[in-house]
Each structure stands twice: as C-alpha cells, then as structure tokens.
Amino acid sequence: MRTLASSGQFVDPDSEEAKPVKTMSQFIKYRESVGDPLDVHWLEFAALDELKTFFWTVGKDIFANCQYSTRDLWEEHFQLIERAGGVFGYRRSFDLVLDGHVIGMAASGGSQASCYVSITGRGCRLLDMSTVARVLRSLPFVNLTRVDVALDDYEGVTGGFHASREAFLDGKFITRGKPPECDISGSGGKPAKGKREIEYTKGCTFYVGSRGGGKLYRGYEKGLQLQSTEHPNWFRHEVELRSSNREISLHVLTDPDSYFAGFYPYMAAVLEMVKSSPVTAVPSPCKRNIVATKRTAKAAYLASVENLKRVGGGVINVMRQSAGLTDSEIINLLIRDAVPRSLSRVAVPGLVQ
Image (cartoon, rainbow, N blue to C red):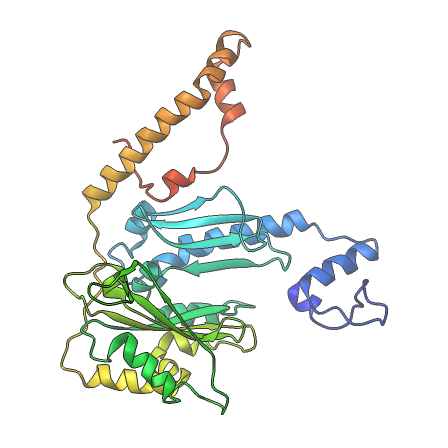
C-alpha cells in the first residue's frame, strides 16, 4: 500500500493545485475522499503483528552477541512489554526487555502505517551489526532516522575535554568552509578550592554542531560523570547523526570507523590516536547477574502488589461484597493487556518463583 501511495497516480485531496499523493497519510485521506476508505485499524494491527513477529523470529539472530541467542533461551529471557501510552506520534509503544534490562523501544500505530524501533547503548553492545544490516536490507521501506557513533577513550590518550575545545579553536571541526557553532555544559558545579572559579565534579560536555543540522558532536567526561575509580580519565567522543537533511546509509552499522573519521577532521585524528595507543580497549561484558536481577524484580513486584492493595483493594472488596461479582468477573473488568512501568524495567520470567 505504501508503494501504491507513492506511485504518483492519485491526487492529494487537500491540494488545490491537484498535487499528487506522496505519503501514506495523504493516500488514506484520498481513499476517504473517493468514498473507499482504508481500514486504518486493520493496518495498525497488521503492523503491530509484524513488529511482534519480527522480534520473536529475528531477535535471536540480530542480538547474536547475547548469551541467549538461541530460540529456546531467547523466548525464555526476552519480553516485549507494552508501555502506558504511545510515543513520537505512534499510538502504542513497547519496551524491549532482556533479562530485566531494557535494551530498546518499539512503537506502532503511526500515520504512515509504519513501525518504530530504537535500540539503547546496552542493546547495541549485544547486536551483531552485520546481521542487523543484512536483515534491514531485506525489509521494505526501512530507513535509519538517528544513529549515534561513539568512541570511548578510557585512559584519556586523546586529551579529553580541553583537547576537543582546542581542536575547535584550531578549526579542526570545519568541513565545508563555515565553522559550526559550539556549546559547553557542566554538571556537579561547586566553588573550586583556592580559586575563584567553578569546578564541575561530575564532568563537562563540549558540543559542536546542532540537531537541526543533522550532525551533533558531544565530547564528555564519562569517568567523572560515572565517578569511575577504575577509569577516571574516561572520555567519550560521540557524534549524533540524524536523517533531517540526509539519508543515513546502512553501511554505518558495519563500518562505523570510516563514518566516525569522516564526521569532522578532528574525529579522524582522534581515531588515529586511539588506534596507535598501546592501551587495550575495555570489552563490554554481556553476562548479567541473574540472581540479583530476579531479586530486584521480585522486590518491585511485591511493592507493586502492596500499592495496588492500598489504592484499589477497597474498591475490589465493594465489587465482591456489595455488587455480588465473582472473582473472575472482577478480574475481567479490571485487567488490561499492559505492564506497569514500575515493573517493565525489571520484569523477568518466573517473577515470584
């Protein structure tokens, strides 16, 4: 239907100049204007079914760096949990939860009859990017709307915040003749001892570019942000790329180094400094403390039950004693296909075992 909508053979009903339909939302209006409306609700549920099927069938393949990337283990440890409301114009949204950890978000019910998927940094560590790119190429109408490419300098060999600032002043962020704008922010500010200045104990961030322009650099003191004793000089160079005025190629998933180096001249220098450094990169473990996760989940579950008893227990008692409803009738009246946000962040199979 989206192919049909973009074919150019239909006229936008809201256009006085008989402009052709170009989007799915315009196509839906066109069908309404000619007395042959589409069943939008059917489209929404069809898209939702495809979204769920995608994660239950392909999830174990794309999250191949996870210890549960086999069919039996994946179905036991992965959950698609509906949130309280929609997001970004989509009417329904879901948390992607793996062993109690949120690794992303999905949504459906948009005006373009499309689905939305966003993977967190934690989730990206578990992705096999070559498989992700291969799977996405096989799907119709797939486009990347935002990609963050980051390089972690755990030992501070790139010079950190001050080096990024100096690189900006030296013109090393200029790509097309016009210098971009910059900004600085700090966290945990307090008076520095013996100096009339502010010390940011939780780190500073240096920004170059803008989200409106589709490319934004962030260099921030991750070690101070996390108060890390193991890597106090940890500095993260990160570029946020948006599709506002460009198409983001799927190659960014399989060759991030080339894209990172091409964002700004300084990024190429940063990459070379890290590559030539004798410091070994710190791996990102994917194993989790299952016992601790289940303990947290059970505590959240019991607290939610107690809260439900306090807020709704009296009403349920009236429904049983005065209205004469059976327990099954009460449950059917009150239950809905959703999970509270307080539990969606920690929910794991076998919660109360």
